[in-house]
Length: 219
Image 1 (tube, rainbow, N blue to C red):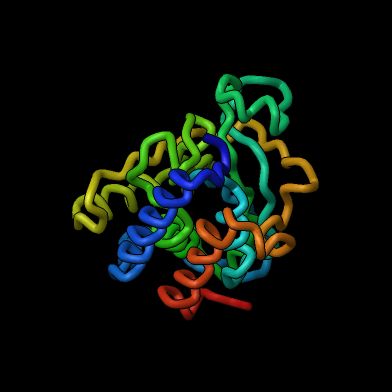
Image 2: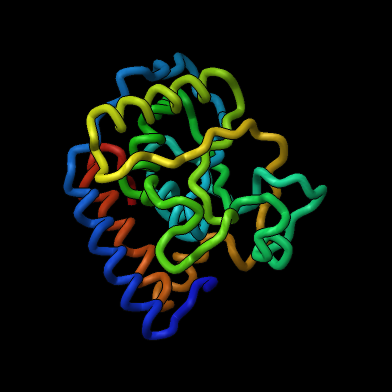
């Protein structure tokens, strides 16, 4: 069911939202392996996926040092990606978000704390809430070996410390191509705050971000 708003879907959504709130109340540790803040401002990208891209995009638009967040598609073998194509689950793509950040303001490890801590549930295999399929998988699409190494180490750390009730299923995939999503998907949460899907699934993530990571949250 894609962004379903049937009664049964809503009930499941509310249950999942409660579990996210409980997870956010658990201290998410600082990565033991991370990069250092750069000496000079610049621009880098980190691409992550974990369910519908609306909520993840909205979260990272409120993270310190993030200059932009763009909803799109990554991980597939098709030469192009559109919402209708990716929604079939047959292209290999995932709904993903390109995080454009200043490495002099925020580290990869700090971005990953937000990603694992409040942006999605990294223990759900090929689904998030009511959204099911490989296009909703939890994945980090790394640009370089530094991003890969930091993410691998952090997943091992979180699993070893049993931060979540289940094992993390996030995959690490080399980034080949990122396709920006259609215009109507961009900044969807800000433009549709009264959407039932947004209120149930995405607004709680923003609250959790502010509550859990006050030093990283920006309005």
